[in-house]
Image 1 (cartoon, rainbow, N blue to C red):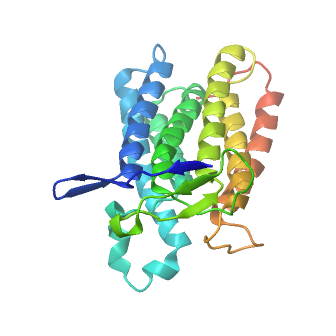
Image 2 (spheres, rainbow, N blue to C red; image 1 turned 135 degrees about the vertical axis):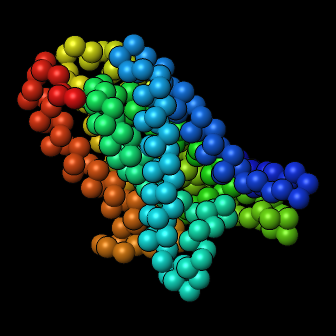
Image 3 (spheres, rainbow, N blue to C red; image 1 turned 30 degrees about the horizontal axis):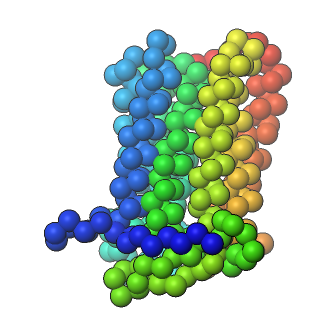
Length: 265
């Protein structure tokens, strides 16, 4: 069993920072940096940063709103808490959806090649999500089912009186599993951008990544507990994951039918 003994927060005098928030910022930084690097040569740096900035802003807002909608039972009694995003509570799917739509609208206005930019965004979004999950691993986010007789079961041991989870475990590290798989999709998307250049239409890699991420979230979330299951015993992230799969498959079929013709910007 792997013990995680870390304080879920960093204490800097009167200032307390959660590892979740720190690694969310790290993920945004490196995700945006990768995207700017990948679009270099076809999209100007100024346009790239404009797309990324609005993508990040829309992603954060959407992530918070989707979390609030999922846990409305907690926020209905105190609506002002909706604004207290610093206290924690975001939905990763909200970041993906809101960030993608926000970036898409700006990309349309700037008249950049949409499919090409989307293919660059796929591994960049994945890298940001994977790095952000490091904070979830340290903080013990998203409780999961018990784990036994496996070398990668984890236990959280930081004292609860100091802000930790106490003797929680052994449990499955679902966010850690997700981090590893998403990193694999990042590498896969980067490889496919090179391998399929000039072969598959622009945008194909993006929708492949959406398909892979949707399946990942749907599958791994069966390990999670204590989340609302509003429909058919499935959690919000699983329902959205299925929706992403159902959208990605026809999009991939349409793009595949276009053959070598690039996706119109």
